[in-house]
Length: 314
Ligand code: PPE
Image (tube, rainbow, N blue to C red):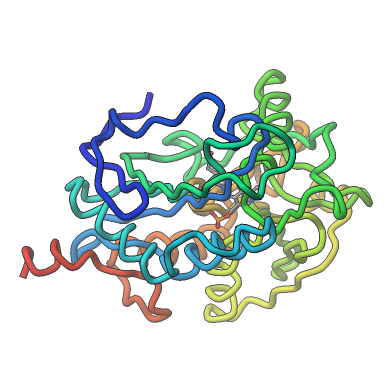
């Protein structure tokens, strides 16, 4: 269960956690009209620091624009500052930050544009997403019988609430059958992504990931891993991945804000590699975790150290 924190940011004001309520006839509740982000604040050696904050905020504004919510009433800088503020005032050294903008109370009906837009930012403590063992031992996943949202149905590039109905079908099915997560194929039958993660495959020391356009969210962690792979000297190709490549991969891993870099040890009960975290996965994962822990230099400029905390620590 979520652990409440003290404050939530709403349209420029801090309000109490318990007061962050919406009317039952709010548009988003009925029609999925909300765009949001999930951002991690890490407890680094230099104090709490938010991972790739401007990139997350930009993606939220992109999602909003796709759905004709061009004016959220705040700039990207405002929202980024507000994320820092909420994380700081709640006094958590590490947390998950959830900015959300949605169409609120006004008209009920598919016609949405007249409803006011509400922006909230909450944060709370969130540990390892796929279980404490997952990062080390890897997880068991299946290929979903559900297809990922198809082009020309719902835009996969937007991170919007409605897309997560598809994700929920994928994840519920996987869990019902005893798997930790499901991998969805796109409408053409190529590998797309997990219910809440991008996927990477390694064979013969080349890293592959499905390109944007195969119904994947442009993951911020995905982008981080692409940069890390290049920095570490691994060749990486963004290309369509047939399902059967999953089974014969040397290594597979998921990426996501919540999942971080999580190895996959089996797919549909077929062991991947030696059935444990592979060496390239481990290398990339350890770099990622070292940067986000502040143990290695932030050479890509990914961390925004929280100002108040930074000066308090100094
Ligand atoms: N694909 C999907 C469908 C997705 O939801 C996520 C994030 C990703 C890829 C990875 O994107 P990024 O976080 O920018 O690297 N999924 C969120 C799931 C958490 C949740 O349960 O909600 C996340 O990782 O925050």
